[in-house]
Image (tube, rainbow, N blue to C red; front, side, top):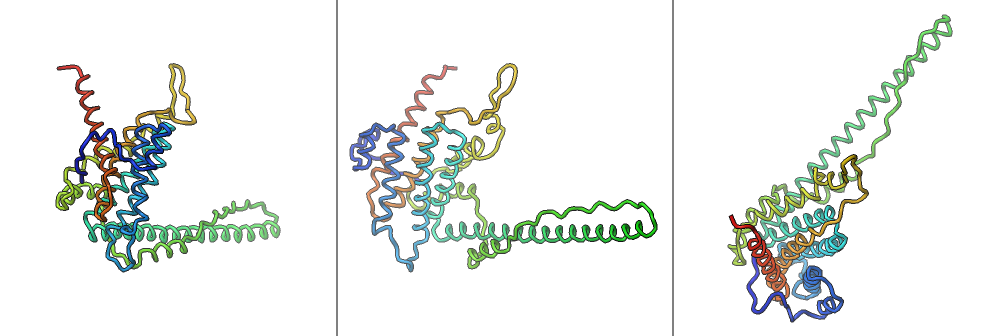
Length: 330
């Protein structure tokens, strides 16, 4: 997927609407300016009659794409807050959630009804596996508790007989230790029934984020909206945010340790980092790309979204050129 090129300098979008102009007036940084532009443009579309469908309309890929964009906007706002706090670890966790949402929404939008069926079926399959494990856990807990009750009753019955014998015969036979009962586990039947009701009419399917990323380029090319190899998004951006924030890797634990030459201290918070700014803008660009493709299908003006996409592509090209120029010649 890719947006179309625009005329003029993408670094100076002079046709921003009122909301964005107000953002400029209060002196926001460029990342926040572009992020708010994307969020405002996407959310405004939700109130447009062209983005409101009858229940009888067969538009599931479109409505799920819009829902994915809405979730991305919510995550972008949280990501911007974490970026301003320089909270790298939690910021990467939110960035990964946004990448996952973008990838899934893009896949359903381009793959159509088959993509929606695969995503729904994968959820149904995972839910049924979850319920099977819940039911098995409940049965095991019940069995373990009944075994403990039987052991306790057997010990108490034995001790009753020993006490009578000791009293009757004047012996001093020691009593058995009565094992305590374990705490009762929560009943999960009600929860499992509710989960099964949610997926009762949905068949099982299997689809992974990696598979979506592999298929996305050919799907976009077939739809005439770009192409390319989007596995890089999964292999680099997604895996990086997983390793540096979403998963409890060595890096995450090490971030809380403040060593000096004699001892190590554990911090209450990880150190601040400005690295999140680049990752935030990468995610903003992804949402702008999807927003432009989805909303243009409904005949909405998406020029501002394309401006954001083009501006960040231009900025990354400038940064790459600067790094290459600064690199020592070999």
